[in-house]
Image 1: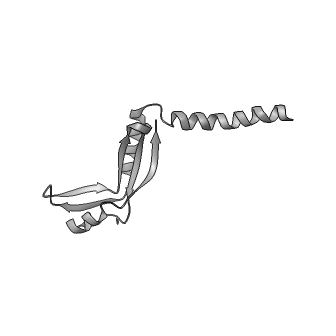
Image 2: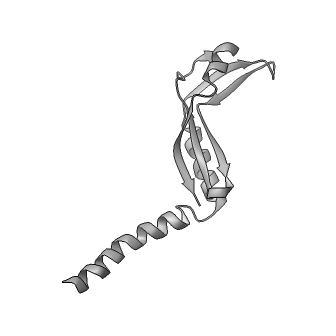
Image 3: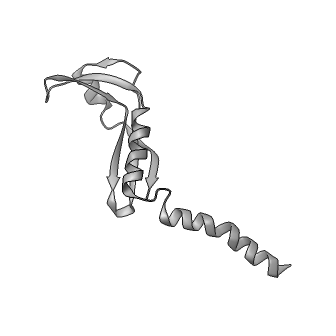
Length: 106
C-alpha cells in the first residue's frame, strides 16, 4: 500500500509545483497581454487632473511589472463608482486605495 501512496502523492504534487515554479504564462509578453485584457474590464471613470490640465479617462485597474518575481501584478483601485467624474481633490483621495487583485506569472 505504501508503494502506491508515494507515486500517487508525487503525481498529485508535481503538476502544482511545476505550475507555481514556471508560472501560468509561457512568456512575459503573454502575461502582459493577459494583464492588459484584465485591466480593460475594470470600472471606467474620469477625473480632472491638474498636472495635465485635461480630463483623465481610465479604469480602476492597472498593471505593474515586477521583474524580481517574474510576474505582472494586477492592481485595483477601490471606492471608484462606474462612469463617475471625479474632481481633482476626490481623485487625489482615491490614490493609494489600491490592492493587488491578480497575479500574472510567467
